[in-house]
Image 1 (tube, rainbow, N blue to C red):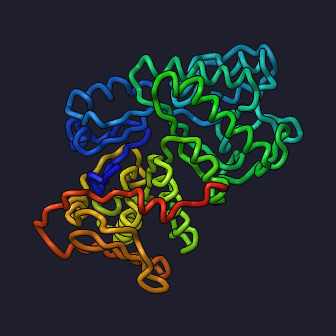
Image 2 (cartoon, rainbow, N blue to C red):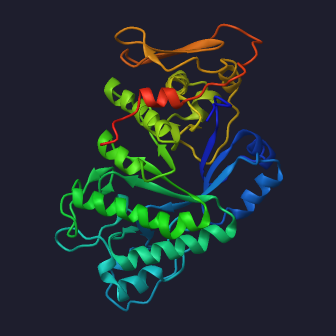
Image 3 (cartoon, helix red, strand yellow):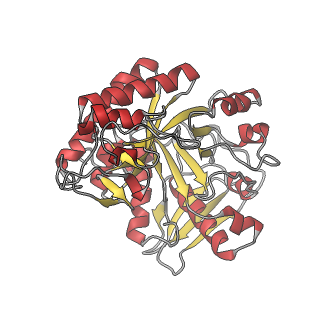
Length: 396
């Protein structure tokens, strides 16, 4: 598979809310990969009608392991009537019909994931109750809801948000459960891998779709085990945390994740966390630096299956990035990245180079176009050789 464009752009979660710039026609030209939720089907139709590429893909978003529980009604006594809430339940999860949670509470209380003391678990301290994906009934329910929402509406696949390599309930920290013990247990991981296999068999393969997820966690071996179950992975905090830069070893781990995905023909999204409103509308130097660092880090490992989501917040606004034209002027990679010295990472392109130093405080990055008006090579960069050189051991 050859690299045709340095920048394949992805869009996540909801249609943009700044229509003066982000018209369907503008978005159709800018974005090739989409993750949206139920209720966005009309917007998808508008983007397609406005000239989206035939190669564009649209995936339907679902929470990986939890359902919307308006008012935490799963905690109420059995047979307590369902209480309606405005604009709920949310349509980003499998419990998208009113009364789902109370019916499950009354008929299938063993479907919920529980702490060792028996209490049910809500995700991220919010109204999202977590299910035990090892239960056959839960799997049947999830697969039925996914199939009902996805394929008849023309989506190209399923995308699980907050898919983790451990069992977590808040802020990414592992949590012990009654069913699987420690949040880092191999029993929980085996269950999750088996669940992803079942979703593929029951939902994805029969409909010739794709299975993706926002895959979180820093243990590379464990991350790779889950990644191999997916067609699309997202690295949400690629190269940086939300409010800080990563340590060099953590930064390089993100590069290895991207390389692993390329070597295994998995589409890999890099989400670079910075605020474009501050960077480009308020001319904030800190966020401009973060934008440049994330973009340069991405270019070190860009390949045919790479996707860039530039900006982590806000998800609902599109921006015009004039820097993208300069990036495309680099041409194509001439090979893989290499360490120029103990701290400087470099990759050469047909018309320039990229250098990143993750060790300085703050880290530095250079994107330098040294030639102009140079035609791209007849044979665009092919990533297989690079991926094999950097392939993470299959035993992980």
